[in-house]
Length: 395
Image (cartoon, rainbow, N blue to C red):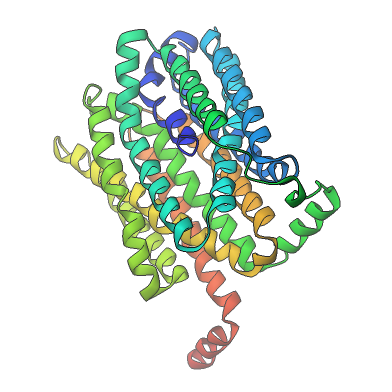
């Protein structure tokens, strides 16, 4: 449940965005989509801090602090009367959510190793895949019964239950003698080393673009279903089906990555995304008639979610390859930076919505193209002899 806090806090909000926009920002209702990216931005910053803090002060203290901030911020969002207050509350809610989400991974590592750890992580990832699929449906049920403010009550109850259960059932997993002092000098030195590797810098940029594409789709998928295709009532069900199908991407990636390698798989996936985005842009300019237009977008949405399963894990692994000796700090920094940049890139895309899918599709095309170029550049950086051989052949 702690691991799924992030997914529940984002996806359950999707059905509430029209009502929130109409009530809190009637002049610019599409600003409500920023509720998602502000949460993600706060989570990204919190991700960088939560890990090192838990190494110094213990796992449970950081979880308690994060959950407290999450619950208080959800209460402020529940009572908010303007979209500005809502956005600030969501920023701090995301910051607090990073505690349970990130530290829960560290707890698994404290308790298990080897195959036992892999088994637990597999169960966690299965739950993590299912939550985004059912969260919009749960959100729609809550809104029907209690209005959009009921979503934030659900967030509070969800967090209180999961953290209370942990408090009662789980002892502190990081012994005092195993804790490490929090030293700014050590963090600074580790970050300098992290960014000294070209593969780390490039893979973080590409990961940021991949996350920006995912966040952009999450921001605009609800208004597109509602306003472009008039599928308001069936949106949660379509989203559930798409998320379940896209969830199989992680399983497919486990099979393909051993055969083709991480770099090639990411590069090919981005190339496919370029072709899909270009085709979808042509279809949208040609005003594809219904129901073919909706069917095409449904395929596009599924492939975009599928892309996340074939790129994000591999890009994170590429970035982690040269920094195994500082894995803890590196993992937090990579996740934090890519999440923050991804949210920053996605925010203006959400505001460009004009009643068509064209701003979203065009943005996907640009980001996928830049990511593809960066991956090709990474290949040349890591294999300079290959570039020399190509130049020699051309000559």
